[in-house]
Image 1: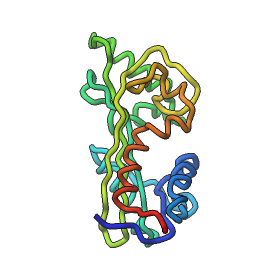
Image 2 (image 1 turned 90 degrees about the horizontal axis):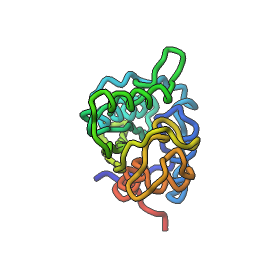
Image 3 (image 1 turned 60 degrees about the vertical axis):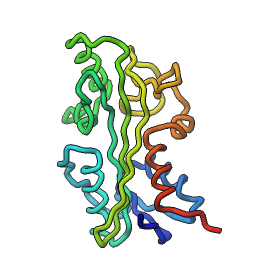
Length: 205
């Protein structure tokens, strides 16, 4: 597995919150991060049908455009009774033409479970795949997940996306009710990130 040996990592995201979180996680390794927006990079079309495929598109496009190693992620929620949907289309379910409406998306997920008569518990998981790509075309892939179930009605104002309807295993509150930093310790992204760090980074000594 290739180690990251630079001091600057491009994070292929336009999400300032995500950039801040990743920057804090990489700070102990002496690595600074720069976002796609700062480099004026467009968001490439995500045309793959897997989290890894879409993350690869974003990471390789950013690395090629800037000459910097680039980190990207693709994530979503899979609901067992819906055959793993929405999966890679998690954000698409929220698209309205005037921005994303995740209340609409969560309501759709609940309605589809009711429409097929799915019995509880409604098992689900959040998935995240991180891809670290180098300008020469090499990449390393790190999948992460957290198991849980769908809860209704929506609960909590924290987090984003489908967080208000997801209760992680071992908890009785939704991600939407959980403190941001507590969620970040156990989340699907944390799982993937821990694998990334073990694989590609080493503490400066």
